[in-house]
Image 1 (cartoon, rainbow, N blue to C red):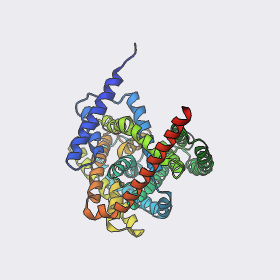
Image 2 (image 1 turned 180 degrees about the horizontal axis):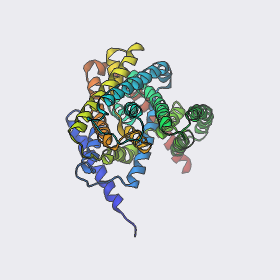
Image 3 (image 1 turned 60 degrees about the horizontal axis):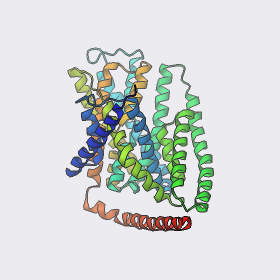
Image 4 (image 1 turned 90 degrees about the vertical axis):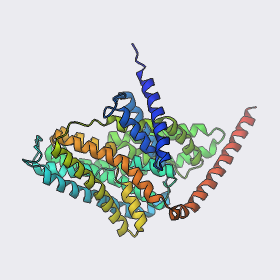
Length: 429
């Protein structure tokens, strides 16, 4: 007998995320915070109305893929190239400082008489692994917040995107090295080869697809809807190949797919269609699913103290590490703070890293509770802190010109699309 519970789950998610999103906007917070709270309240951590079903998981996965694909579509490639070196420095310090901070706090608590560990790996490897967990960054939360504020395609926004992609690669390398020390079946050099192969795949495949896509668009402009479908196919293929063949996150593949298609004819048309799909279904399910995944285990006083200090370390190390990297690259104090705040969120990435470490004996199950607390708090406060850094009269004036230029471009694209549609209907008649 077929079960239709997923329809009710979907209705509850869409309604609750919208209602709480509007409430959070009324108190000058990003709507994404409301969506996260909706999943947290309805999930196992609070009311237990919703559970993390396979359907919700798969829809949320498509949601984050589309979200990062749209981020790629909206990214200014020239600005991204200019911030390439800076993004690497920001990402490197944004990994190094949290790694050191996580190791330090674990070294203090992870010992007999403080927190009893049942992990099979050595204490040193366990402590390093806590640092590896803190290196993770969930850029999808930041992307949605920046899009909501209209600040994604800014100097700070591009730096965050570039640093987050590099952060993902560095995180994979760090995770692979530490797990290879605990599990001899993991080959570090093979991981490096796969990462290199991914960038070769993106470079060669991206050039061919961009060239063919551009020529095809110019030849068949009467019905623009077909290009949205082709763009989605490219997005899904790149996401699949990144995860399946190269061991890189699927959202990284989706982001590069967006970069490939951006600057082609009718990019704004494609972006708007994906924006509608994301707004009405995919994004609410994705952000709610993060809250639904949260299950707070029982924790004693020492574990709670460790959790509180771990949250503080998690926030400060990302802000200090990424902010210091931005300052070394001559960003203003305000932009450096924005970049640091934008990299704070750990999201589902930290949970995935923690679960992999738990599977190979790098982390005691008793430490999973503090990691969950870090994920919940950093995910909720990151968009709030990020909006605070952009909330000023000076900031509004600083980006008004860019915003006006994008508005003019959208108006032109709308007019051009309407003209194409009218011509197409006329030809049909």
